[in-house]
Image (cartoon, rainbow, N blue to C red):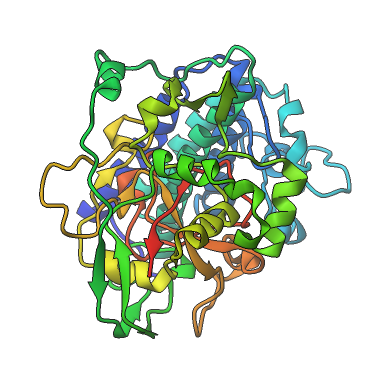
Length: 441
């Protein structure tokens, strides 16, 4: 297996590694140790667990295998902070510490891990970071380099999940704490009159198109292989659906009209009592929306993209308008020619923002950032798809059933993490993610 020296490429990888690891620590600075224990819904994990699991990934898939003389920080962590890698257990990679003859702990129990404490987890992270640095300095095998790159992108995924989970945790807290205070004048700007960009549609000719990742840069296995798809002529909206527009759907009894809903969606609505997007609260006939920056009125958020809706809600809204959701390939074809720019994590806004009428607004805007966009495409492997070998093959491939594809990233997605070919996926009833709606026809 070929190796690299500590060349420019290795230095770039080491710098990207350090920055990604440091950003995770920056994201938890506003949190108390008690905040980091909360697991407020089945999809979420405690912040403390995110800190440990991302270190577990680097130790389990890289340091154990490629760094000679590496000392495992704590053998129990190998099974305690595993997430869903069943074959990692089968392969015997985690065998120490007196682990009981059962699978790793159920996800719903993660909030009960009062031990190890946060100080020990931070020492674990530092121990792992030092190991990766030593591996790169010695000249890492190419397979190790590729896994470090995967680990960095895995860390960035968990940065987004960490903020998503904290929003849910703070919403379920009766005190409704704020993760990040509003900046000076932010609320006043939102209360002022905003000229919202009108929703228009951009025509695309369709035809035979290429889809999937191109080039030598990093991508996940589910973005490959690049292949051809046929697209009929279509149109995409120039922006995302706003909170104010979704409120019109609600006022027209959108949540009470079964003819607008897929059968499974209507069942989910009935079982969960949905009457509005997640984090919307009605008091005295007035709606408010909870964000990482605190509670805001619907009036303040009216021009901002509606977020935290399920695929079923997005699909019902599209049916209500007489339109539909884009397919993932329509979206990718439209977004592939533009730069990765938008309201992403680096903006520091941490909430979807309105698109003003300033500028021509002629093209498809908000492709990247603000909200993940539900598509009408089921999450399946591309023709010729091959998962990564070994336990890492469980990263994406095992979920190719019962999931829908989302595209474009959100206001808590790191810029370096997203690209036009990136495929996110969740079950259609998922609402805790920053997920929104773009119309197509």
